[in-house]
Image (cartoon, rainbow, N blue to C red):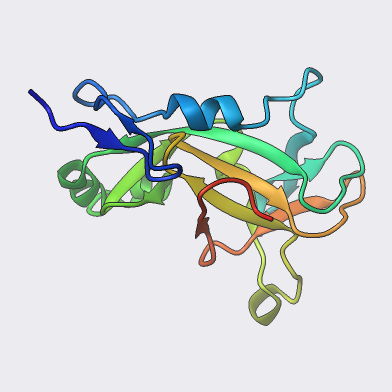
Length: 165
């Protein structure tokens, strides 16, 4: 018999997921804002040769707006280590807690990088790792105008126990 699993976000004790399946906490899922009926307020398009594709606000966004929730499929540590030797594959995997990597859904791979010291621009998103949901969420850090590119600092993802405050 497998040891019960504790949700890393809320601490709820739950049966472990089947082998290879991502963990999704039912309590965290129930407390999480649903995808808006009109869809996430984003659109992806070509930015240019230096930045490739990017994600843009499809409407004006207030600070601390959930822009998108991207479900992930965590990869076990042994496979994650192997992926580090495959540069093309590794470029598309996301760091995940527990020495793992994750395949990310949605537009998650298309959000571009910004950091004032590097690009001269400040990012307008916070990337939040929600291990209890097997998801990554992108939240605005300030008001964002329609058509503005949505970016985050790749070295500053945060593991939070719920939405940012």
